[in-house]
Length: 170
Image (cartoon, rainbow, N blue to C red; front, side, top):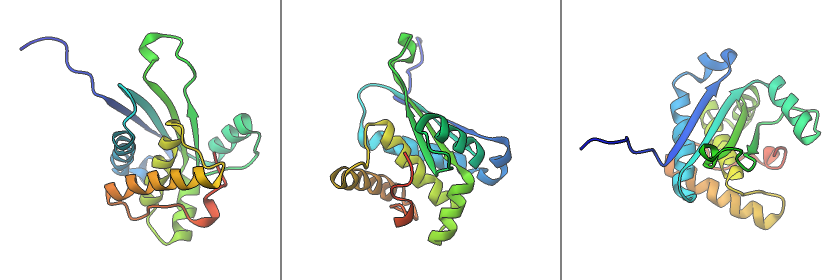
């Protein structure tokens, strides 16, 4: 049978800033898997696409300052896509931006691998793109439960954020 190839339901692009490419290495595949698992768990309608960018503190701090008015680095930022200007962008959920150095610091403080922390932050960021937030205790419980389910499904070493980082971002 010939015809057009079937479009994947979920597409996740991973971009790693050059200064962190060696540190992330093969872990980029695990980050894609974390994002895909979160999408599969939450089942958004139709197709869904997003990007995950792993970068440094300076880039995250600049984005945090520009878009949130907070002049500090953070671990993860999520930027939901606006209404699409073109039909081919209708399935684009947005971008998840992760600070590798902040993830590494949090991993050290938590006593686990940086990759485990990066997975947690990617799941967390994707949940934000899907409409979750942790602005209230009830919303936080709902989001943390979804995050824990996704991370347990991955067999991740870490399934919830360290207490000190739970409300510092987004």
